[in-house]
Length: 409
Image (tube, rainbow, N blue to C red; front, side, top):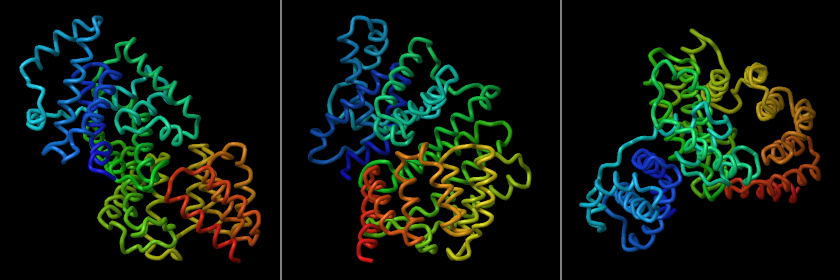
């Protein structure tokens, strides 16, 4: 990954949220920031500036002002912004020196998650603006067509503009009712970082770190502890603790059962397990708490053979009662296969075809069960279908290895 690509991944959300705060316009801010990155391709050819974030922020503000000057309908905004910027020379040196980039990301996430917006649009808009995910990446996260997500983004931005939705963090009494969607957004951000839908890397560390950081910030907003928010933090910490063991030095995917557990982050495991223990002692127990408890059971097993699959299977059953998702049902089937054998799980997986038939992990899971049952030809067909559906290079290499192993039997 180039230096500019790295800056894009790590700084997009912070710069864009600051621009939205300054400009009051989602589309204008995003357009200006995209132009700033395009300029950086040329300007940074001989090396990045001392402060890349500040350079991009200042460059984008200048470009936004140029755009406003060309739009007569923005005359009022022009007078407000040009006064602020008129005395600032448009030079690379000055851009490097402008180091003030306010952190407005918390405002942005609550604006994107405003109750006036449909829940699915809230999530899509936050992933697009806060994390800089492409429309295609968001569509992969939702298992939906790209045009559907594109329409949601356009409608959400139009709604924010027409309804004059405020760009602010809600007052304390309003936070709880807004929290559930915000947590769902944060968890999707984490999941995109933990298992990237596209690209050459399985893990996008900056997204995992951003989701964890946002969760810690959200916890500070609440006057009283919120068990599910604590559980979400625990869940992400426990998953993220395995990050460095999930991919080999050569970039190959390593399954949980084959990971070197000495490479897991014990500090994150300790914090996550302590949070889980506290939640289960005080309650109430929600979906994130159950998922965190499952992750804690994996974390506590010093060897794969010591994993308490029966307890994990029971927890997935309890989770499905609270959250009847086909993906939860798929995970329950995987746990059942480990606790009782692949023959007990295959009918459960097959029953999910109508809802998960276009999901690469459904085909990969089914292929693994068929492989373990010795049904090689069917396993090969399922692995091939999984390979067709995944767009992540690391996962593709893993599936190709599985196919090669079966072909050599």
